[in-house]
Image (cartoon, rainbow, N blue to C red; front, top):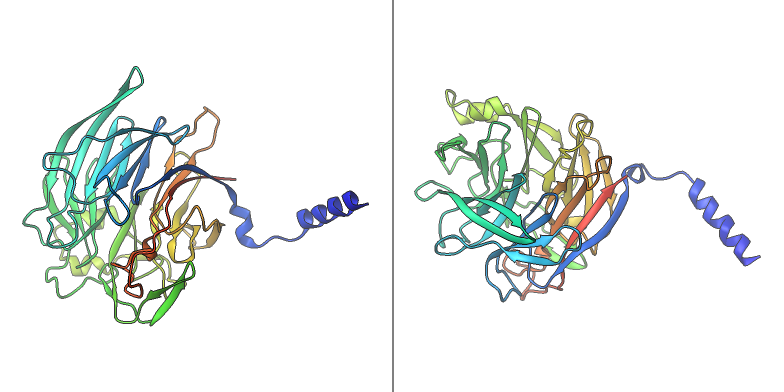
Amino acid sequence: MRFFLSALAALVLLLAPQAASAKSDGRATTLAERDALIHGIAGDDDYVFVTEPGIGVSTAGPRVVVLDRDNGRQKAVLPAPPGGFKLPFTLRSPEEGKLVVLDAGGFPPQGPPVVYDYSYSDRKGKFSATLTRTVDFAGQPLGFAEDVEVLPNGEYVVSESVFGGLWLIGRDGTIRPGLVPADPTVPLPNLGPCFFSEPSTTVGGLPFAGGGNFAPGAGSLAVHDDYLYVSSTCEGGVKRVKLSTLRDGSRPAAQRATEIQTVAKRKYAFESLKGITFNQYDSRDDWIYAGDPFRLQLIRIHSRTGKREVVSKDAKRFNFVTAATFLPPEHKRGQASLVTAADQEYRWATLNVALTADQFKPPFIVAEFTPR
């Protein structure tokens, strides 16, 4: 009888109406657990790369670690550039054998941001990598570089959050303004920073200070079709701008910034969608996948309608997601999976001034999520 009642209860739950967010659920697993704080992530058929900025509990110093895609075990450490990494932050793997590293340069006044290009290979099971290009932003008016994205034509775009701007790196390595304020004291609409208006909130059971504290501008980046998508802590939600508008140097940035479109408006007073990304392995998928770190969950937003769905509320695995990317299907007819890095940033007293000391709880998890 107990078995019958349990089976009946399970059947009732199965047939009961589900919340809208359940339509987009999937399976979340742990790919790797790291003792050091992780922030950026990228990957391909064989590897997953994560940045370890050397913050908090880290004893290894700033570095980029190479993990085995199949089991999450560490295979190698990316060779550091001359002088070493200052603050390796975000990553892109635009094609197999190529890795792009944004070194944010540390917190002022440590140094300017630098973008490094690496080529890598695996011969007889041994990983090797070579630094092929260095683009140094020394002398440029950047406060803090948040993200780097590779555009379809091979150019890069770098987001800067203190003044709020988008910088372009040409295929020849030349740096030029994309959408950058002419006067750093006059932020561009939709890209500039601001200050939290709400006094405080709670994240993962801990207080998080708001009211009067700095809310960064342009942050996470993703490219899809002819648009660059941007999220920021100041604006919340997701914006987008045409790539042609971004590249148009014939008009003032302040004029072009008014053409930035809202994809999804801010939903919460404290909202900073991180690691926004598209599934480039499915041309029919127009959803933006992102970490919703203040709620310790994974969401997606439709890039045409702005509709939101929560895809996972696994707070242990998505413990303040800062970066996400899709990995190619492991089989010809398989499905691409999403990997994420979560850095427990709300537990860092440097950024959360409501804390008097760091309260990190290792391990830091590299999660893998397969949408249904």
